Length: 135
Image 1: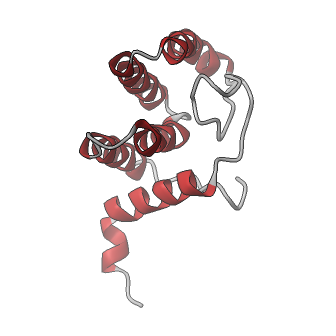
Image 2: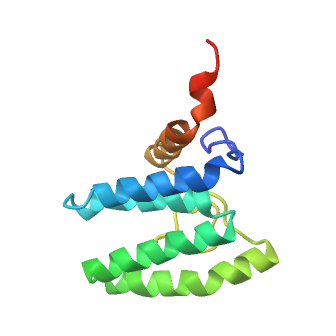
């Protein structure tokens, strides 16, 4: 992976870090959408290599778009939900793509530094073995 993208997490950490990012999104209720979307984008980037997490990231984005009454984002998320199983079946996943309607669905991306920082922080937050390491 690129230096800007986190190394693939240990299989046990990925779902925990994903859940951490979704929890941070939920905890940000009341903040403006521009402050909340990056939590979902980070969850998407982290979870997109695992079918269940990838699906959950888009359903969370769809729910939020519906809450905001953002028709363009709703349509984009419905399209992406249709593409998720196919992308996994064909192993054609646009790594790093943030999963939003304003970016091409099939374009690999290097996520913004803020997104990767959120992913790194989530991985650190759930990596209990890091606390046990000397040094």
